[in-house]
Image 1 (tube, one colour):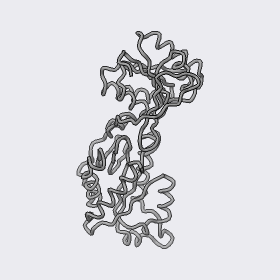
Image 2 (image 1 turned 30 degrees about the horizontal axis):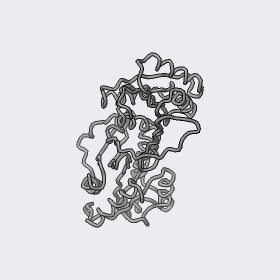
Image 3 (image 1 turned 60 degrees about the vertical axis):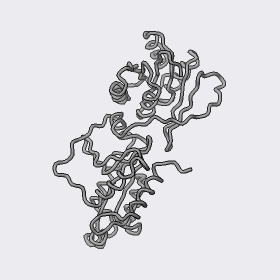
Image 4 (image 1 turned 90 degrees about the vertical axis):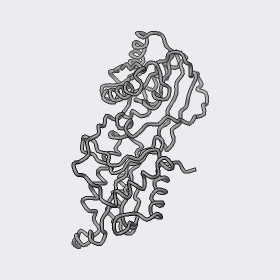
Amino acid sequence: MSTAPTTMICLIGEQPIPNLLPILHYRPNCVLLVHSQRTLRVAENLAAVVKSQQPQTRVAQCSVADAYDVADILDRVEQELNAQSATKLLINLTGGTKPMMLAAFELALSRKAASFYFKSEGLLNEIFYFPEITLPVPKIASSPFGTTLTVDLHAAAFGREYAPPKANHKPEPFEAAVAAALQAEVPSSFDEVVVGARYTDSVEIDVIVRWKNQLAFCEVYHSDPDRTAQKHDAKDKGSTPAKLKRKLDQLSTAGGQNYFGTYIRKILIFSGTDAKISDEQRRLNEAQRVFCIPIECEPDGSLSPSVRSHLVSQIVDIVTPRF
């Protein structure tokens, strides 16, 4: 990309990451966030993160009245650009509505501006970079994308704020053993492991694992399957215990599209064997797209070396590509 002063145009949809990562990667002089009233909050969160991470980058916002009116979107963006000093354009075609993308495509075509599409789905990010768009659109190979976000930056992009730890909170031995096993794998298997993440809206995650830009939210559940079964009478036999249901609900909330984004992996780690998973729990796991990892712990909640190795390998398979 040229070293001349650059304005990056970003189309704001519900997911901020496909805009934030390219901004941090290309480090433009100015960023123009094109948003509707519906995505104003997303734009504001994104602007705050950019200002904190790249204070030298000027952030401007362009509000469109109708995110589906191509002509109006293009006109408003042109007005914003005409009011600025002349700079080179770099247009992110990734976010926003499809009509917003069409307006951005038309702008890139008319101004012979560079543009790109950021592929965020999947376990590895890629970027399709067009030095100049012409018709017919040339075939462009994707390039690997190495810029990464920490768990903290990922949370900030969604406007999530940390809450202080609970007073006198002490994790159960099994939960502590799982957390320690995963923390020991940084940086050999994982880039970051955060234990006991709490947010101000009462969402708690036992362990967050990050590999590059892939996050896995892990809830850890320890119970004595035999004693748990004794607490249920015949009609309740095989149902999911309330504590486990709460953990699944936490995964569902935190891994939701509007909370931490679309591509969060959700994992339930519990003590026991696959045979101990109730039919109801299997249905919940499937409905909420939760990976389930049963492991057998020692009587005191600790993990043997072989169990630790098995746990790590299971999570590595979930958060890294399969070649």
